[in-house]
Picture 1 (tube, helix red, strand yellow):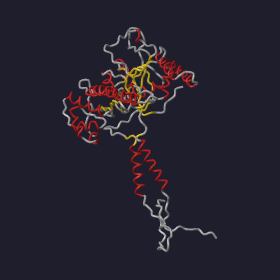
Picture 2 (spheres, one colour; picture 1 turned 90 degrees about the horizontal axis):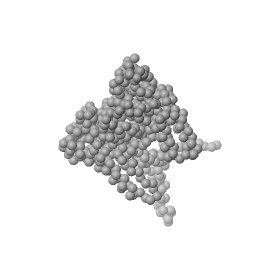
Picture 3 (tube, rainbow over the protein chains, first blue to last red; picture 1 turned 90 degrees about the vertical axis):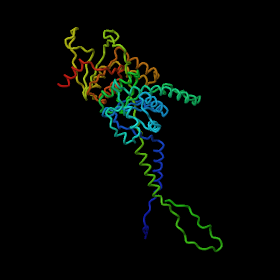
Picture 4 (tube, each protein chain N blue to C red; picture 1 turned 120 degrees about the vertical axis):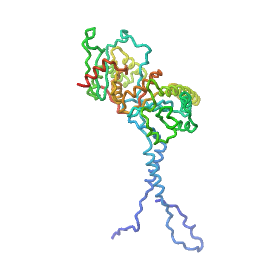
Length: 228
Length: 215
């Protein structure tokens, strides 16, 4: 008669494949992921069929949140530092070296120039809760947003040109030449779905006042509709 | 199972001590696995994959002087003006005629439509037939590899700027939400409308809109 062996002691399961898989996934996520940036506002964006990717190298971003507050951001550490220096000089706001470093490190800012030193001394959570009604002032009498965009645009042009020349010289012969167009400043508006359009419009008008007419709206992608 | 390969004790050489058979050494992998999963969870939660896309919109350059309304080049024969309010959408075709105008035209009436496929999209498809027909024709040619990609784009752009193509003005009132505006622009892109002009609302239009909203 066949005997059934009963194992003694605790049964052990071979966990190796599971562990392998877990680490495989860890590696994948580590390499493939880009981190979510810590924005001072969460904005739910409308959807559209837009297919263009968001420009990453030379981006000037204006965010309008649900309450109509306006935030400003741009890419490039060098650009940010120069822009802030010019803004501080224009509005005669004394900024410490720590403030500078903090500004270069963080993403969007949303306060008027005279509040900026205080704003920069806060941490992420403090900035989220910062009491501001309009964010960056953008009305026609006192338009700080215009200066932010203007300085950022100028600095970004120089920076983009430099980057373009640098990267073009690195390009090998067989590769496709880089397009200078990709290194020009791109103006992006990130407007909350529920924001009053009037506020978004004030940001748009600010861009248009500076003769920057090609704007991009950040949208989440919806399945592209086909018209028959 | 995690086991370490172990030496049996170097074979049996001349009457050495008899060792009891040792079980292979095991390493407890639990902490490592815990850490692995912790990292996995962290990366899964903090990473963003679906990158947002952008929809570009070129605004007309701001003019220094107000344009002359009688300028013949500004007269459009196939235009729709959309007026966007809080989740509501109105439109009128052609030029705006105020009540009791000199030309004896009937005063402009606003028609309400909705943002859905039966409202706005249907309207645009009907009005912009010229471009859409052209697009279908070009799409067919492109699929059969009769024309190159660049020619396709050029022809489509030409069609969009043609006299017969639809031109759209988008006006917003104070109560409009951003999503309403984006929805309209999005539909315009879907319907291949080439000329899109977001412009300010006129007082007379605002009055008409107020009337329509209160109805």
